[in-house]
Length: 544
Image 1: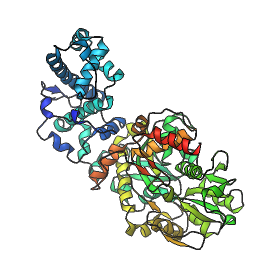
Image 2 (image 1 turned 90 degrees about the horizontal axis):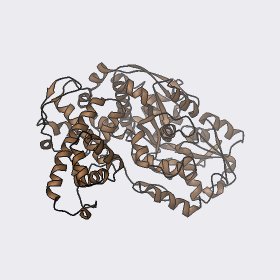
Image 3 (image 1 turned 135 degrees about the vertical axis):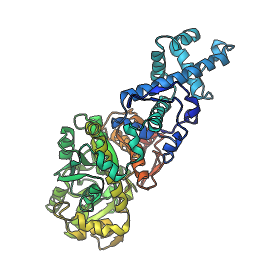
């Protein structure tokens, strides 16, 4: 997990250096952090590395700032290195062994010795002309936790800038009021692509209910026809931001099923919100996954949460999704047509299309996606890294509007109002009664039953990185990506969890302070600390 070790908790007293020329404002600042330095991060979790990583991806740290932080850290390490030698000159060479009992700095020093090829060479290199190369090579090749070292580097950079330089752009992070953001927008008029499903509720409702306007944004919502169009438009940079299925930013960033392009998942739009609906002709014949054998089942996209949940459900029922059923990719609206004319036997899709099938007596709801994985991620706000780098303040304002909207949509008393707003022709273009049934969780299932499921769809914007881990294991399981992947690196590259947390806290929300959690699914529990073991257990148990 990306939790900063206590070994590397920042101590302002360790950073006593000569005055430093700030690369952002050109002024000289005291080397020691201001006494209020830690107060800047008072609202942050124990480890700001997540936020700092996200801000670097957004381009809010200049290369000079990072170079400065690296220099400061190397200087501190040299002091520690000197102390290390002073305390251990009486040790024999075979006692310079790296073990888990050593603290972080001692472990790094020992690895410097190994990298340099001995004690004398290490001491000379550490204080010679090529000292930077030595430390950098050690960080890259050693077993020392490089992530913790980088956390310290970036924390030093951010704290120095936040506490000592009023002109630094990262200082704006402590005062993201709507008015401040609106005044700093690089591009106040933007276009957002969306699919007309209830998963897009925060993106859609933020227009008629004023959440975009609150943050100085003038948004044009562009209705897309299918998920492939969303993907291709994002890669081409045709619009500014997008409503995407949660696995899509991962797949696009990894080049799975499309050219590789860096897409960032800014925040989750909705959790749950899907169902597996079976054609009415199969009424009373299908009560379990095993009875779906031989069916033609529609999915919205190969790299979709719907496909992964369906495969998980079928496999647990003893069916091989690639052999025992036929999966076809269709846009949500086309699924209704195909269900009506008998071309498909079932569909797993976002709402309100399941409820529409029930209302038109075309099918019945076999199982809600929330029953397969309670609280699973469905859709998200996403945009390309180049756009974020070019318009960082606009991106932050947009993300904040969506997080604010999610919080509003999560409250039951607002669901009826939201249903009226998003059912309009320019948005979902669906009967308000269907949208209301989905949002309120009071609905008919097509079998004569009325259900009340409050979280049939819900809205929690926090992008847990355990979502990424589970999705990646399923990509591997179904041969949608290579094996032996670095789950932590993938999640860190795509999920802007730290920034989402920070923005939520500014809005008075109470987001989690950790990035991973164990996920309880219908048939097992996913532990993100050992994703490969989970994957192998699935394959061993079911044979695929």
